[in-house]
Image 1 (cartoon, rainbow, N blue to C red):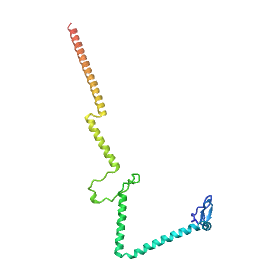
Image 2: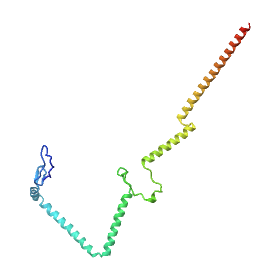
Image 3: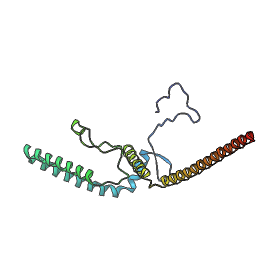
Image 4: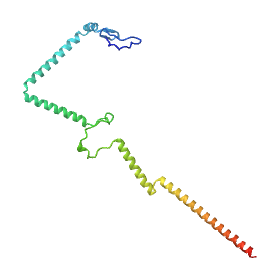
Length: 199
């Protein structure tokens, strides 16, 4: 019987209470275990005889192996257990040393505990640390080439700067020429005024 669900009432269909151990037969109908046994006895009489013979053979083999065990002395049994344990350990080591499928390996699995002596030893970087290091190295390489003017961006920047310098130089020369022309014009006006006063 199903344990009570507390103060809440079962909705639609109610609780499930099983009164007997029912099993589905080959037709899909629920049959009690007793009826199924009765039906199966007639069909399986021959099968049971053969299976009983096999069970008897297995039991006799087990008994013979059990009879062999007491013949061993205590020291021999201990040695046998040690050998079996060593074989199991070698088998376990062999399984771990074999290359496993990459999909089955857990990347978060910790292989061994970190000891104080291991702190000085170079450790393997995590994925994130490795990516950050590679990114920084790539940036450093890029800026080194950039300062030498070998990157596309540096070449375009230098070309733009050269163009701007030329424009500035041309503008400055134009301003100088205008300023000289203005000063020459002012000088000419002064001279005309002075000549006009004299006459």
